[in-house]
Amino acid sequence: MCGICGIYNLNHREGIDKSRLRKMTDILSHRGPDDEGFLIDGNMGLGHKRLSIIDLSSAGHQPMANEDKTVWIVYNGEIYNHVELRKELVQKGYEFKSHSDTEVILHLYEKEGENCLQKLNGMFAFLIWDKRKRKIFAARDRLGIKPFYYYSDKKKFIFASEIKAILKYGIKAEPDFSAINDYLAFQFCLGEKTFFKGIKKIEPGHYLILKDGELRVRKYWDLDYSIDAKQSEKEFIEELSNLIKESVKIQLRSDVPLGAHLSGGIDTSIVTCLASRYFNFKVPFKTFTGFFPFGKEYDERKYAKLVSNRTRSQYFEISPKSSDFVNILPKLIYFMDEPAGGPGIFPQYFVSKLAAKNVKVVLGGQGGDEVWGGYTRYLIAYLEQALKGAILGLQEEGKYVVTLKSIVPNLGILKGYASTLQYFWQEGIFGSMDERYFRLIKRMGNMGEIFADSFLKKIQDDSSSLTDFKKLFNYPNTPSYFNRMTHFDIKTLLPALLHVEDRTSMAVSLESRVPLLDHRILELSTKIPPTMKFKGGEAKHILKAAVKDFIPKEILERKEKIGFAVPLSEWYRKKEVKTFLRAVLLSKKARERGIYKIEGVKRLLEGERKFGREIWGLLCLELWFRNFIDKKI
Image (cartoon, rainbow, N blue to C red; front, side, top):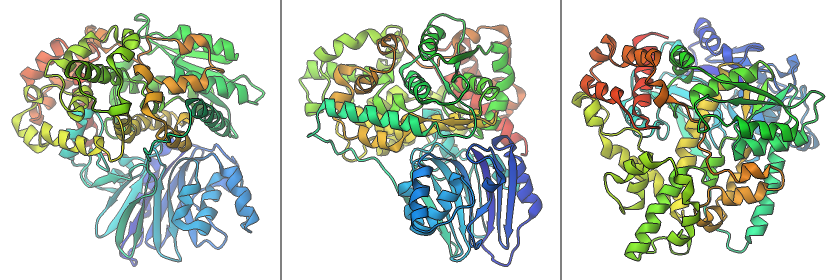
């Protein structure tokens, strides 16, 4: 893991301001405290902060060049199949001076050009400066695990792992109200947008080329939802099981100590059970768990300890307090650059901090819910469709439908979700699938009661969010409601959660890996019929079948798993948190900003539905304005 940044002046005669490049690089120090490097080559400047994981020697230093110094790279990530790729390249006559995966990318680019991306298995964001062709080639991994931001105008191209480094160059921080509109609706931004006007991100599975003053962005990978009707469920299960095992095995490659996040749910249990099986270090495998002492919906230690005991791992736990929430949230928004995702960012940071005291690399379970249908909202959506089909006699999905009869045995999972069901159905029922799912994931209620009319005009309105949502949701050739829901979440929510994963780990100089997001696993998932993936409305049906032989039965049969929930409803009633909320959202700054209807904010603070996200969204938005618009980075 590393921090990368750089400046390219389109005027070839204009040199690089070394002091600006230094400031950009320094602000990324938390991403790479082990080493730093710079390249200034005429109108190109590159900066790098290194967190050493593979080949800890100076041979892994970046920026790195090929033998004749005509091709340079700065890179953040891990290529897990670098061993196999190195062997292929050596057979083709390429020589290596290091054992790093960085050099593998460099030589693979020399051999394959942009097509090198098709052979990389890993998480990555990199920029290659090809001096011979005077060309910039930059890319981001298929799922968006590692970040890449850039600013481009007719004079310069500036890029970095984090937006704050681009601002450090001197780019003015201005709000992009279209992106803020996305955030208020979904709590993430769609497409290449960021909260900052003029600053974009390379989308997952995309690359860019800058040559002769022309910047082109291209997609190199996407999911294909063509169903494989020939393969049996048993064959899919066996293939999936083997892929998961292979992914965990190659992601254990490291020259430094590793551990794993362990929540007690299926996904982290899969990773922990397999990692501990393949782990060959002389020290015990370590696991890290977070909890809140507010009852079983916030405390899953029972299951985490069960898995830890079965795998004989060394168990560590932490319980963040409400005082921690008050003290650390403004700092977390700074590390994030822009808000994304829900309150899970808060405990995730503390678990990462705990892990960083004991290991340098941690494996997590991200992706299991989005790929295999683990969210309760999928069941809620299908409950409505099953009722609609039973009452109106409709079969909108044909052979992919989940019937009312088949879904009944799984409805017990919805115990405790009465407020969610009430919210979902309070403004209609039996509408089109896209509009109903939009209702399910919409995070902000009636914005007209909370935000000033002038602000709502700036960010457009709710209908614009719905229009943008429909374009993504109604993706061509995605048979079934289930595939459309998971596709939307893979393309939008998942990158937001990976954003959180990256920032909470990098803030404490910890590398985080996500074995369940090996692209081969996702490519298999889209071929499997939805009737197998979401059989009878059972979350993660086929995933459970694929892992049943190596995770405890008690984990497989859990019914009450709800994710890393944070007791915000309980904390909002505590004096210190209530004081904090009022100090931020009802402050003189907030009133003068002209964004909020203060009376509406007051009403919201008096009571929000359990697991509601309105207060959280407002709080993060206001803290972002304070961190980046009010202050100068």
